[in-house]
Length: 248
Image (cartoon, rainbow, N blue to C red; front, side):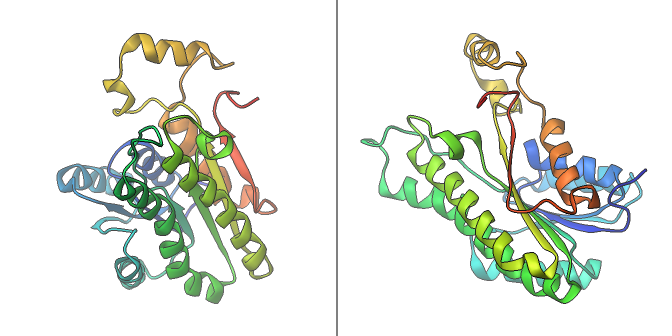
């Protein structure tokens, strides 16, 4: 059974990592996928071809969700090509970690802009279409760090906590129009980024997690699939921790 047959999803920041995993799972479940990437055109083309091979419509767009006008143009382009937008996954994000005493104003502003302002930009841009349809599912990528905080990540934690407040507010505003908005808070997810870390450090993290392993991109993608599909028709304004029990 394909849970997203005939639906169209926009996924920001999908050329690698969690975003890529979401795009793959969505396409397997019949969704047409419009995705954004910032610089890796080659990786985007590979993903585009891979999704099309699964029998869905797919297109990658080089677009910066942190720019208000670019977000609006992206949504206009997607509607022109795909005809509709049913699902928005706000996944684009960056880190610029440092202790508070060492974080520059620029590094604080940049993380807020990419991780939080982009969520505002994209949600505002798709709102008109979803209001017209009287239907839609918006899923915002937060983090366990946004729920509990983390030393050395004041900028990242602030941006991801902001995503949670934004999500709950949108759920309250748009619920009467059958538009749902939820957040996902991934824990330690093993991607190519974490692959560069010291193996002992990574194993230490795994040992501290009740399920004794890091998460996969598919673990996060499956949670997104549930929240994007009609299986979660009565769920809005929630934060789902996908963290192996880390915050338990």
